Structure formats: structure tokens, C-alpha cells
Amino acid sequence: MLLFSAVCVTAAVAGADQIAPEILSLARIQHKMADELKRLPNYSCMETVDRYTSARGARPKPFDRIRIQVAIVDGRELYSWPGATVFSDQRLPDMVQSGFVGDGDFASMTRNIFIGKTATIRFSGEEQSDGRKLLRYEFRIPQMLSGWTVRLGGSSGVVGAAGSFWADAETYDLVRLQFEAQDLPPFSQDRTIAEDVTYARVHLGESEILLPAAMDLTSESFNGDTHWNHGTFTQCRKYAAESSISFGDEDDLAKAVSGKVEKDDALALPAEIDLHVQLEKAIDCRRAAVGDEVRAMLAKDLKVDRVLFRKGTAVKGIVRKMALQEGNRPYYEVGLEFTGLEGGGRRASFVAQSEQVAAFPGYHKNVVGFGVPNDRRSFGVAYFYVDASMAEVPAGVGLTLVTGTLRTR
Image (cartoon, rainbow, N blue to C red; front, side, top):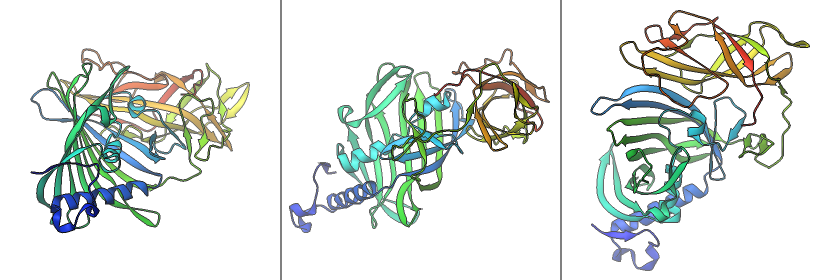
């Protein structure tokens, strides 16, 4: 096998007949990918992630499903819950707050390999897949050049990477990228972390762009527990200029891509206000995903000195947790967050803590003796438990919420 640096490989250095075919192919792959990445427009996709987990030696079991809107804007990866009008640079683990979550390191990895050219690459041979010939190359990126950061709590560390990529032997399109972390920091609880990404061409406007189609993120801890996230990317489209982004802890949450500040005319509800909310549509715990919209309405008029919103006003909500916990008596841990009201030409924003959830078949306020996970819990999310044999939060269930101080993050 030939070993070579990916710093400068071009056919102009010598005649094509004096250069090994695999080196010529690499140069063409790199040139093709560099062009793809440079002409990549700002875009957004819906990412659906099915998460699985298993104890040492056991088969992976479903944990939950997450749906998140991902935007790539000027090379930055931004996130929002589906249906939200504002993207944020808040890290994905900070949004989801439970379970095994990754930030999409493959975006920076492709730039390292095909633009920054920090990788040492070795030709590994030809393979056949789905009726087409693929060229496989192995690569290694040293820790000091990778830029791949792993985090645990308040600690973070840069790791190296080693893996492979496959490209079509005729078109030189990237087909698959697989890599594993090297030199994990001492604070890491994982023995291995690996990603596997497949690519496909997608129509964005009038252009056909090469984008990730699916992603598998896996880890194995030192005690033998494993985690597997399988994500797919759909509904990809160009990122509209009028869309809004929030950055950091700035006071103005709504900033357009152009940098202009957009004023939000939503009323901020004061603290200590009771909200009586009723679900309009049942939630199937077996199919619901974190990020799904929750359809609800006000069960009573909302009064603050006067009636602000009438009974029946739409209440904006999302699923923030939907995790299956198995044992002698399996159950779903459910988290619902309600953040806004809209009706009668008016809007209101709020953060509210659950005061009460009306009982329904299979409902449990607490689960005793089943080792409830100690995941971080967010203020403003109503948490409760549903027996897996029922697996549904039915329409008509009422929740009493009490508003708190509205926070900007």
C-alpha cells in the first residue's frame, strides 16, 4: 500500500502516466469535495435520531427518538426544535439534556480531509457496493490538527481521528465517511466513540448538492455499556435569509442573518400565573419523538387583571422527553414543555412549571423502586410516567402550570 500526505497531490506535478492511479483518484476526489464544500449554500434539514442503548453483552434496545431542525449557516451548525422560527448556536446536548448525543463532527471532519488537508491518507483498495465500484482510503488526523472536541459536563478535550472514506470510482463523489476518536481525554467515560456517515445528492433550489443522508454515532463505555444513535436527514432546503438565529447570551434573541434585529411582539407573561392547559391530540409514546409538536389549548380563560386569552386559545408545546425505561414493569418517562399562546391576533411567551397533571389510565406521577434516571431536568418541563402497557397520553388530559420568570436562554 502507498502512504502519502494529502497536502499537495496534483496531476500537474508530473505526467499522468507517471502517477499511481490511486493518487490521481485521490486528487480528483479531493478537488471534487473541495468544490462541493465551497459552493455549499446555507441550508437546513430535519434530523430524526433513533437512540438505542444496551448493558454489557446485551442486545441494543430502543431508548427514544429525537427530531431536531439543523441549519448550516456560514459553516456554523445551528439547531432549533421543529416549527421554531429561531435557530440557536446552543449545543445539541444542551438542548436535549439527556442520553447520548453528538454534535455532527463529520462536518468539520470532511473539511479537514478535503480542504484543510490535515490528514495522512492511505489507499486501501476497491470495493463493490450496490452495483458500483468504490475507492476506499484510510486516513489519520493527529490530535493537534483535528479540531474534534469531546465534552463531559464542564470538561472538554480535543481528540485525534482515524477512519476511512469511500468514493465513487466514476464520479468521485463521497459515498461514506467512517471515523473513530483517538487519544480520548482522561475524563472521558467512553472507551470508544465512532461515527459513520453516508452521503447522497439532494436538490437545493436549482442545484444538486452532496449532503449527509444518514449518520450512526456509537460509543462504548469502560463498563461495557453501549450507545447507538441512528440519524437520518430529510426535508433539506436552502436556508431562507429571513430566518432568525440567536447567538450566545446576547440580549436580542432574534437576529436575522443580515444582522438586523427583529422585534418580537409576543407578550411576556408575568410569574405566578396559573395556566390550565388541555391536550387536543393524544400522544402515542411508542411513536412520539423528542421535538414533536404537542397540540393543546387553554382549558380556562387566562386573566391578568383582565382576560388576555380566551378558553380554546392554542397553546404551543413540544415533547422534551420520551424515554422507554425497562424493568419488571416497563414505563415511559415523558417530558412536555409549553412555551407560548397564540389566538385572537395576539401571542404570549412564558416558561411554566407543572403544578398538576390530571390522572389518566397508565399515569404515574412518580415511579417507586424502578431506579428513575438522574438526567438533568429542565425548569419548565412537565415530567411524568406512563405505563408501557398503555403507552398513550390521551386527548383531553389537563395540566395545571404556574409561570415563572421568563428567561432569554
